[in-house]
Image 1 (cartoon, rainbow, N blue to C red):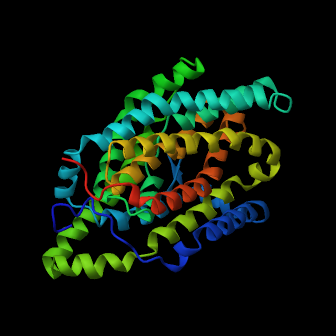
Image 2 (image 1 turned 90 degrees about the vertical axis):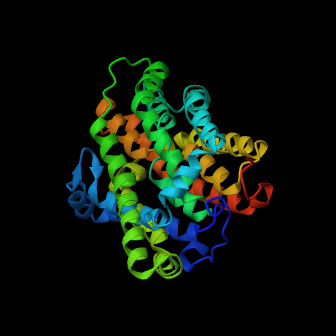
Length: 358
């Protein structure tokens, strides 16, 4: 990040062992997680006790490990430069808040209340719809840093995009969900929201900043950029895989107990993910945004803040409700679908300029 355009110039990374076969690793970790939940229930039971404000501390630590290597690449000068390119922020903000929640409602309503009506009762379909809406109203906060890392996104701009969305969540999440679901007494767990922001943004960013300042001061910027940062190659991917094992060990019994309904819930969620990505990515292409901004910007809306969605679903409808199940399905389908979008993003870099228009 020594030059003025380094924050927006795509950098070709070498593909590590885990990243090369990441889809297979992800599938394997999901299977292992489900099996642990089914045959070793004491493991997720013990881990589930390690939580605060409905946020799993073990999962938070692993997500922190995923994000920290990316935050090492961020300096405050690049953050200031990112704020001078408002088009990328416009794309992600409009897509996430004026388009995504409403397309999620329409698509989920069509499939869960019309297409699958012969197999899903009306009441249960309404609960599944509620879970889908909760996902649609909560753009991603943590995992998008992983998708950005895997697609050579600009870490500083990704951070700014996520931070803007987190600020909007504070004021827009409740009224949007209330409008779409007709529920006036929504109790948003703000402790969950604030704790997630602190764990997934403030702490790793602060650690990355301190690491950059202290190590660069002691060993030099060249050492930090060329020797220290590369030591964390693969840490993000390993953290992702371990997170999947834990997440799906929590949900193994639910997944195995509702295979047919999970498939039906997954249909609108998958369609919605690809649609929102296409809207944001296509818009970024029309505006000629740099690839390092276009990819992460599209994936923020395509993925979801599932920690918040799950917490609200449980508080509103209960742990065993259809809404809670729908948010869990959101976690189940997100990683494989987002990996396919990462691959597409990496293959279409030539569609975009390397620098943003002034």
